[in-house]
Amino acid sequence: MLVELGSPSAPRAAVSSAGSTPSETAPIAVDPDLADDPTRGAPSPRPPPA
Image (tube, rainbow, N blue to C red; front, side, top):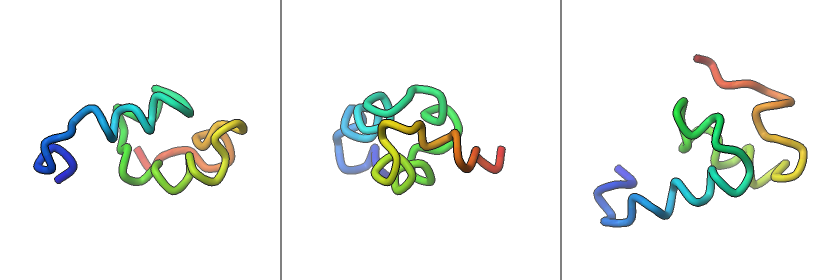
């Protein structure tokens, strides 16, 4: 869906800003997490379901 917008670099940049670990799992699900704890490490408090 994000790629349909024509900006595949946009979602990737958001994940890279906080951590390039969840980028392979699901950037959409991590989006809200990163915004909440960008310095803490979104995947730290609540890791992905994968």
